[in-house]
Image (cartoon, rainbow, N blue to C red; front, side, top):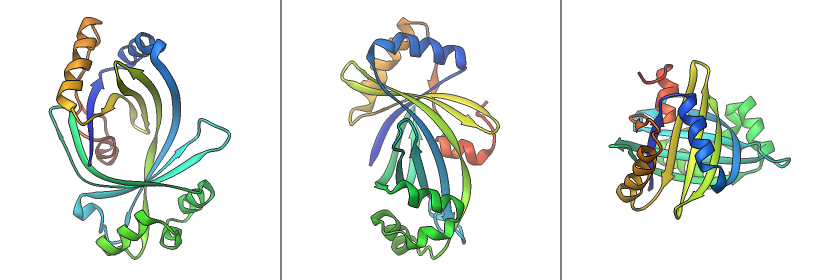
Length: 201
């Protein structure tokens, strides 16, 4: 179970202001390319699950992760989702981007689960989006500040994984208020917004 605080920033100005405030605490930056898949018969989405390939392109040696997420719930800016992830060879990942059917042949614990638990016997691509993620070590937690680039617009979000989400959320909110950064609870996952085809109002 992945538990994360998720807070939305209203615009690029708030995002840039936060990046400046956090700059002393920055540890890395990821350029992520996220692509999603379902079974040909929508076996995953019909069970509130999704399969994602994520490429990290911030280095000369790109990384690729395959991830199964299921039963996501977001309440009061706290997301809880079942997650299983593993790293795969990027060349295999790129081949699957070109031909989603090749996912059937990948030797992967996650994909075995997808086939066995959900009965998927062929895959289709759903498309995806890019994320620029800035990562900070701040007050004993890891903050991830995301600029999400959809075809229909940009979204700005702050995430923080924690087993004490209410305490951490209060700490982040106090920091935002002290520095007059506008924010709101995230109501939907990035994937749900992608599937809706429009930014939240």
